[in-house]
Image (cartoon, rainbow, N blue to C red; front, side, top):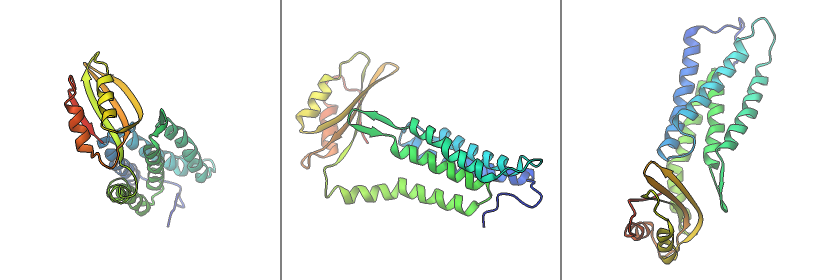
Length: 225
């Protein structure tokens, strides 16, 4: 049963450490998955959101002994505040929208941190497990099921020497019959990074596209995600 406050409205150091540390570990596990997939919000962001939510919950329940503060008001403000942070993770590129899953994970880790801060350990742990399953095994299962009914889509990462125009890479992708839905170009040190969101026809597999692009002159690296 969820209990935000004890009868004495006090929380010892050991219990506070347990709640905040658990929030950090669970939020970090979800953030690690996002970090490995190179998303905008990764390990540190998710960990900080989870720990912050836990501390807000603890402070709301135990930090105002001299005043009667409704802890549920603090929880409501956490939900509202995390909405703005999640919106910052959503990026629109051309006709595609990126970051929706990352925004959702930020929202969930705030709930995990809130639950850990409230002492609802089982709910925090179970939710983290469900999220990790949804982000990894369920994603793989859904991918293999849906690819039978629709064209495969994904993102092609191409690295070029700085100053190299991306036109040759784009032309080669188009020649394979692949449809480009969005194009992103960035600079990282002495490399130009090209990100292409593409939709593959049924007769073109991702490894074939990667091999074709890798043969384009000046391409330093190419990766499919």
